[in-house]
Length: 114
Image 1: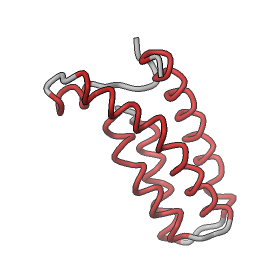
Image 2: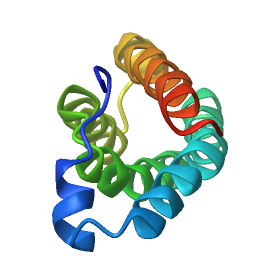
Image 3: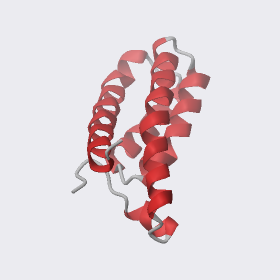
């Protein structure tokens, strides 16, 4: 049973098409870690445009997979990029999202034998 993610929106969107659901979770597992690393790099280098672009790209996936806390934290990252804040201000939020993503991805891989 999923603890770190929720596929109810995916099932609703797909009319319970299992192939579609599997494709969504596969894309999440393969693409989101790469996008997150690019967001982290943008934050590290204070490249606000890059950090924003990748946070914005990740956001719909977090919503779709019911990762509400991570979704709210990605919104904080987006706001941070717009205000051009100090890196120290966003590091804890970024680390929190990273841990939640790692847990969800690990669980998805186990649940779907990916």
